[in-house]
Length: 90
Image (cartoon, rainbow, N blue to C red; front, side, top):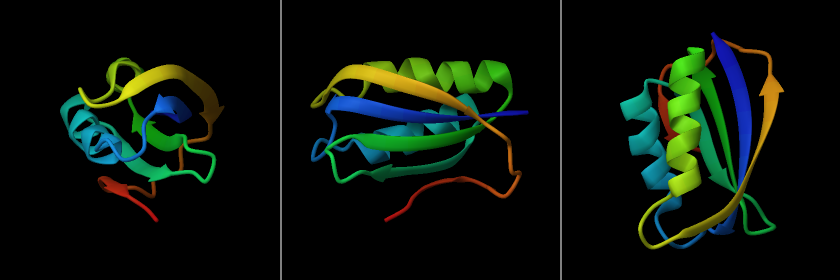
């Protein structure tokens, strides 16, 4: 299992991005969280197999049809094993 933190930039707030991320995470088979950040970006934390996390990143790079992703920054984290699903946090 691996863990990654993604910061997604562009037109990603107010376009259903967090709920898009939930669907993408469930489809890829990753667990974690997604939330809006004060600077207008979205943060997603994902844990799962390397292939699942990679699939999730590809989805984040595309984003929902009403949004426009310009950049996805990825940083490595230590897996915590504390997530049982994928959900929005506020």
